[in-house]
Each structure stands twice: as structure tokens, then as C-alpha cells.
Image (tube, rainbow, N blue to C red; front, side):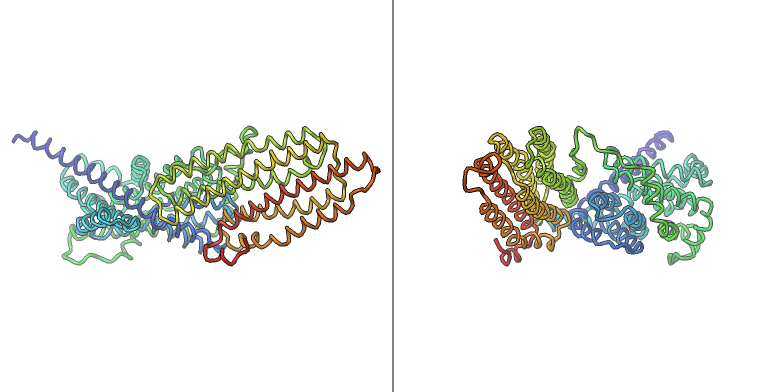
Length: 572
């Protein structure tokens, strides 16, 4: 074989090994992350929802969630929903995003171990569990093992393919050009933005360092660049999303860019600190021994960088939140589409726990709109203004649009792999969406039609009756809002309080009906004659019955959030 032929063969082996290994790494990472999100998504969402105002607790929760599901994007998606629903402040979310950066270093710490030898056993075990088990949860556990095995195997393939590069002059020259921090940071940022995975960049750096192809200082600079490059993924994901998602992405960018700017002049000191805290690999001294120490040192430098940045900036979460809110101000909703879908993110459909979570918050928006619609309904319904009734009826159209969008999104979620609990939650959300749409129809159709009949019949609502109906209406509106809050926050106590309102609300309605009947005129006297007043009374009773129907729907919505064991103890 000629020298040229051998060189061509080496090039093929190099690039096929490098790109093939990277493909295996990314595929395994995606497989493992997807399975982790499905198995741990609900628990992680619950954990994030319990974050207090303690900043360090927010950091710890962000690090834990991201470390477990291996995805800071999952953490960010959950945060957007909580912020939008008012369950978390922007300042609280800043500390969680900082913690997520610490959690993202878990992958590097794992990869720094000599994990290649575990690759094929994990692939074998994962395949057997994933493809032989009939239980969906066990299948996901198998996919986690299979994905981890592919990640480790991909690193091994890249390491073997890149070993000859130590003697390849052009590559040695290229690495020499990265000796200054700025080019190395830029290279790490660009590569991470292209592959959209900081874990892939860190894994490649660990492979290069382990082969003795990259110094610790250069490896740290490239890793710092990866922290900037990963912001591109968050930025792309925020395009066209709610303002809360954009703000979360901006926090991510600011935190990482400021952190890199702080450390870029202290890379030698960071490298020395990483060497001092990293245990050495047993073996004879020499260049090979030093290279064997580098993967752990790179991983530790990555962790030190993120932990130090968090400790430096965690005291300024409120200021960062205010800065981001100024940089990304709220924008008014379109007057043409006041209830356009906000949380129905198609990218979450592959992760049912997160998609259901987003649908729940969208349902909360729909419920708040319908509750506002109910609040605004009474003055037009008690008045003699036909134009006000027409405006009230028109408020139903946005609800119909969002209702269709929600059902379409929930239907697409149902096509995925759902646990039995997730399937139950999905059907609950479908029923609540239908109930809220029914309430909007009741307001726009039943209330408006009854009021128009009263106007046509020249019936009148006396001031005392209007006042009493207003008190009853306020109770029903409060019950509806409380039921919506119970759904959004999955609050069993709020749901139970709505269920417990039945006796009080029913007694108010009966009392209004009885007392009002006693005041009816019994002869041909009174303004407009007795007929007008009696007609008004008939329509008043009809309005009470319509409101009673809304109250029953509110109680049904609340009942959906009460565990089955507790429903038997609740009144029907």
C-alpha cells in the first residue's frame, strides 16, 4: 500500500471514528435524557414547586433537578410555567437557574471516570430491560442504562480514533493556536452552539485531555466557551415563546457570560486550584500519567467555575431579576386574540409530564378568563342594554378558540407513552377544559338569552333583588376562581373548600327566591303593573338557576382534584 493510500485510510478511520463516536454519544445522551424526563419529570416538577424564598434552597433544588434529569432546559420549562402562574417570582427563578448550571456539571464528573469499560455491559443490560420488559417504567429504566452505555461507548470510540492525532502536525498546530484563552473560549462556544450540547463539548475535551492532546488550561478555556455556547440552545428555544421564557433564557445568558468574563483572566489560577483538589491516578510518573489526571481536573474545574459563579452572584438575584424585566418588558396581549395559546409548546410533547404541566397552566389561563367573564356578566344581565349583552356574548369566542387548541394539544399528548397516572391526569384536564367552555357558553348564551327575554317582556329587576343576586353571584364567582386555582396548583385543600360551599350557597339562593316572592304585588298596582314585576321575578329565578348550574360545574372541577379516597367522604 502506498503512503498516500495509508494516509487516506488514516483520515477515513479518524473522521469516521470521531464523527461516529460523537453521534453515538449524542444519541445515547438524548435517549437517556428522554427516559429520565419521563420517569422523574413529575417528581422534579413537584420539587420545583415547593421552592421557598430561600435563595440557597433554590440553588440546591435547581442543581438537584438538573443533575437528575440531565437537562437544564427541562428545569427552565418548568420554571416558565410557575412564574407565569404567579407561583414563583422571577428572583426565585434566578437562583434555580444558577443551580441548574451546577447540576449540568454532573455529566462531566461522571465522564471523568474511566467509564469506557462499563459501556457494553450497560448497553447489553439496558437493551434487555428496555425490549423484554412489558412495564413502561421499566422500559424507561432500560433506556436510561442503554443511553448511558452508548454515551460511554461513544467516548471510547472517539478516544481510540483521536489517539493518532498526537503525531499529526496540523492538529498539533491547531491546538497550539488555542493556547491563548480567547480563541479557545470561542472554539468551545461555536462547537457547543453547533451540536447544541455542552455535555458533548465537555466529553470531547475530556477525551482530548485524556489523550494528552490538550493542556488543562486550554481545556478549561474551551469548557468556559461551552458555557456560553449552550446559551444558543436556550435562546433558540425562547424564540416565539412567552416573555417569561425569554427572561429565563436571558438570565441563563447573563449568568454564563458574566461568569466567563470574570474567570477568563484567571484560567491559570483555576487550573492550579483544580490540580490541587483533584486526586491523582495511581501509576508511574510521566507524560502518560499526567494525561490520565487531566479528565478529573477538567471536570473539577468545570464544577468549581459554576459553583464559584453561583456563590458570587446568588446575593444579587433580585437585582438580576429587575434588570431582566427591564431588558424584556411585558407586552400587551393582542386585542384580536386575547386568549391565544401561551404554554402549548410542541417541543414538550415527547415528555408527557412536562406537556401535561404546560397544558395545566394553559387551562389556568382559560379558567381565569372565564372567571373574569363571569365577574363582568352581572351588570349587563341586570341592565336593559342590548349592546352590553351583545358585547358579553362576544367574550365567548376566545374561549372556544383556546378550548379547541387545548383539546388538540391534549390529544397529541395522548399519542405518547403515558403512565396510568398521567393518563388519568390527561382525562381530568380534558373534562375541566370542557367544563370551563360550558361555563363560558352558559354566560354567553343562557344568561344573555334570559336577559333579552326580560327586556322584550318589559320585566324589571328591583334594586333589592339585584343587590341580593349580586351577593349570590359573588359567591359563585369565588367558587369558580377557587376551583381553577385548585386545578393549576393541584391544591387539594382549595378543592375541598369549594366542595364545602354547597350548603351556604344553596341556602342563599333559596332565601333570595322565598323573600323575593313574598314582596311581589298582589293586585293591579305598582310601576308598570304587577305583570312587569312578576315577569322580572321569573327571570330573577331563572338567573339564580343559571348561576346554580355554574356553581355545580365549579364543584365538579374542584372534585377532579380530590383524591379518590377522599371523594367518598365529600358530599355529592
